[in-house]
Image (cartoon, rainbow, N blue to C red; front, side, top):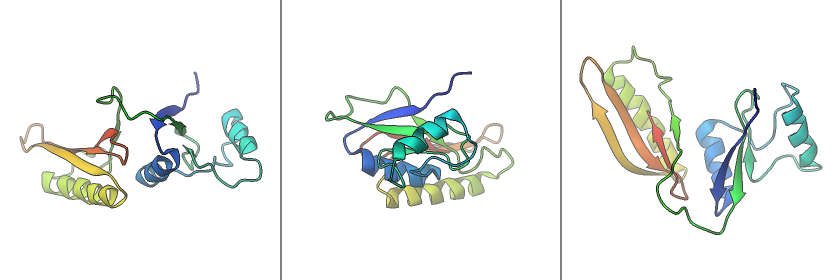
Length: 146
């Protein structure tokens, strides 16, 4: 298996790192456990600092870290890759009104952090109900909440 991190170009890496840390429940410091080569690498790079300004980490050390790479250029167009956030945990047993309530609550929290809503997509087809919200982070990167 190959270890990997997600790298996102950012005009203001610190701002995006703060936003996404809140959105994902990540931390700006690498976790102490599990004691993997990757986590040791980043803990050693911290030096005397307690946290990074441009990187975020899963506090459980199970998911890939994210680095916000500085760039002076705005995003050239639509994302070719985006994140989908699932506050519903993809629980198919949720009734449609409850699913919408959970998603809209998370959307409101993300808007308060600086995200914006692009549009909503839904179907109340009893055979395949769905609901998601297309959003943009503070630099305009698209993501979805479902």
